[in-house]
Image (cartoon, rainbow over all chains, first blue to last red; front, side, top):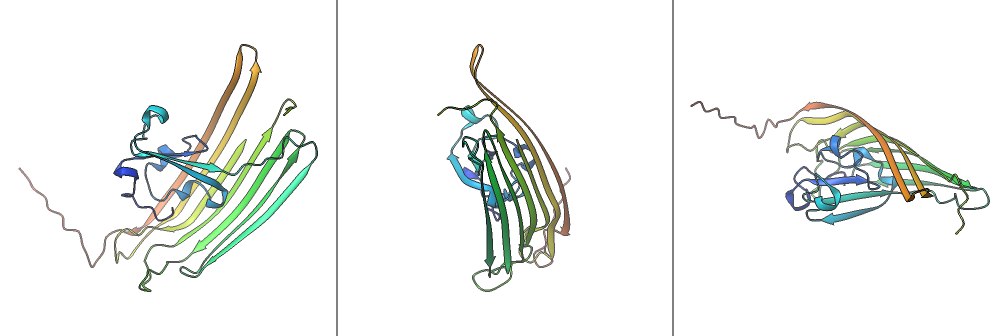
Length: 157
Length: 78
């Protein structure tokens, strides 16, 4: 996803990028590559792709298709007791001598939950199949995200 | 409620083979989102409202075109 070029649109037409169903950054992204500046990849749960013109359902910009990025969400609010969960992810890639790290803390109970995440990435130029370094392919960023839910009334399942 | 902050300090763009350098020195994106879901509220069975604000700063630095493969510009006047 980081290396997607301007010409790799769905069906060579502009496509609409949504995050959790909302067109948060589509107007300022405007088909610029890559998609990743608008979200950390570690926060993504899944990506749904609808291929083909979809403006009847999704409105303007969905000429080539729709890319809907679904983010991870905490699931503790409906529990009757407090619970917490944390985790860390580390990735090293030799092709660009890059590393990626992410820490996530989530928890909640009694109608409230939250998820907190922080990550960092540093990749140098990568090497192609012939072992040649591809200029201007480096990437370095930090990301922070926080998500929370609160139920005003008790939910009975 | 959701807050998301993604800050890129250096992102290269493979603009053209052998181009000297071309990269974003800043590509920051902040998003703030607030949503409300209501069920069985008076006349309405279900209400969903969603508001979000997104901010982005970009700056780029580079020499876009290659010395090895220069672009030839042709101007025509009629």
